[in-house]
Image (cartoon, rainbow, N blue to C red; front, top):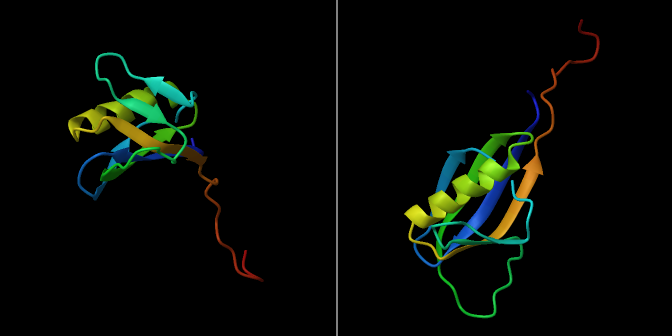
Length: 104
């Protein structure tokens, strides 16, 4: 499928290296994952100071949102994060062939 979504979030409380993971986007604004204690937040404003561990991006096929949240929480837990802040997802544009004027 040419459409894909990008799930990115800021894993809070730790280092600062980008991590890329293949997988899916969130459907809830606040959700705690079972067994991990990692909280996923769509908002990026916090009331208390926090340290950024990493920027995590999860790439997935369209429609795999629930699995993406699980992957994001697993990655955050592996980094030792307590929460993921600023969870966002985007749909990629379909691939198009570039053509120049007059070419066939």
